[in-house]
Amino acid sequence: MIIGTVGAGIGTGEKSGVDHTFQVDLRGVVDLLSHHLYGSPRVYVRELLQNAVDAITARRRVEPDAPALVRIEPQDSTGDGTLRVHDTGIGLTEAQVHELLATIGRSSKRDELGFSRHEFLGQFGIGLLSCFLVADEIQVLTRHGDHPTVRWTGYADGRYAVTVAPPEAARAEPGTTVTLVPRRDADQWFTTPTVTDLARIFGALLPVTVRVGDVVTTTGEPPWPTTPGAPLDRAALIRYARETLGVDPFDVLPLAVPEAGLTGVAVILPTPVNPAARAGHRVYLKRMLLTENADGLLPEWAFFAHCVVDATELRPTASREALYEDTLLTATREALGDQVRGWLVRLARHDPHRLAEFLQVHHLGVKALALHDDEMLRLVDRWWPMDTNVGTLTLAEFRERYGVVRYAASLDEFRQLAAVAAAQDLAVVNAGYTYDTELIERLPAVDRSVLIERLEPSDLTTRFDALDPQVELALRPFLAAAQRAVERSGCEVVIRAYDPVSLPALYLVSRSAAFNDQLAASRDRADELWGGVLDALAATAPPDRPQLVLNHRNPLVRRVAMLSDPELVGLAVEALYGQALLLGHHPIRAADAALLNDSFLGLLGRAVPGRE
Image (cartoon, rainbow, N blue to C red):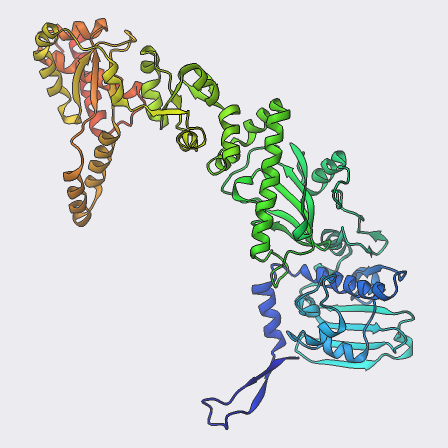
């Protein structure tokens, strides 16, 4: 077998300008195909079907009424352990056999013979080589028109022979019979169940009849509309999704991209899926299955949809197991994304209840799209219910009631602020879930009338009531003792009056204070080199500390403030500090745990007087 010729001799001591022919080690080529090009030996059935369909297509161009049949005889039905594939195609002459079956990578003759035309499946000329993945010997009997039947025999070691078939082996009609003699370790690929399944998987939608034994594996036309304006049989598509994809779809929508020659259906999945796990799409090219796990057919945000499509213009990779990334595939991806987005918009306009059901399942995908798409952002704004400290509301409802969208950017911040903010008549949105903060912050770019405000924990202290100056002056000794009690925890003690009265203390951490805490924790774990870098950062960080805000309206706090025993004051304040940490869902550090333990045991010792 020949790949081509190339100028050689440079650097070998030979006279320049002498051409030599590369010699191909076919076993090496087969090993390359099996380990680096094809994902599985099962592709041999696809290649055989592809060649047969191309041959039938070529014959029907000149004989429109010619039969269109591919008949496969598996190993257990031939009687001699081989597999045979018969087609009613155009067949080959002896010269064509040499050109098409015995060369690799040379396409000029293939072009001249018409087998690289648009309507044919094959594009790469690898042909029967894939069959050597499972066979040691390939025999081809082929007849073109009134020409004699030609026999081509190829071997896995690279040898081949071409002869005119004897009368007893000659074909009575034009067409081709391919016989595979299996390798010793490949018998499982030639059994009737395996061959039937592979023929059905790869060729179910082919426009010819494929028969394995007595079983017809082709189903005819695809179940989705293949022409513009054709009616949609939703029940048939739902049945197809159940049988082919194994899901009971939430919905199905037809797809069409004319410039790619693409038609198909998007199946909206009925259960949540991981957005990071890309959906594998089922792609046919000219009705032959390319892959069951195509990547990149839809935008990443549309992970809730699984596509089954057939295309005529998209390009496959050399292995014919994936789509080639080019400008047409990019345009097709965008067009399909627009159609999925249009389906969502139509749901919002005409079936809000159904949209709400969809959002409960796939809100992450819609929110991911809304990060970049204004129409989807408006949909999320109007329809997606968000958690707030005044109940579950959409952002649009929240704005109608409260004007400004105040939000806590993390779950921890919301847990700290929700009850206290509500007591101060402040409505706050919990924007701590995935994408929520980014979506809220993008709203003013879509609608300039939208007002947003991120609520900082430290902002609440500006809304608390200051104490009477005389009261605050009288509390200075208490505050000094309280500060000494929690000094090792790095927080500042202040006293204010606020609601709810039942809350004795509140631990508030601003963003800058949280940054300083993280910096200190990282410094403790760092080596000497990185410790110096973190020390430099700490020197430039703003001097901000968390605050333990004691509530003067709380009866317990007032009683603690009146204690005259400094040790008991310290234990009580430490206990209030620990309770504030727990109620605010703050992380408990080792130092905090030690302080909580000391205060608990100290108060318990005071509560249980006496001697051992």
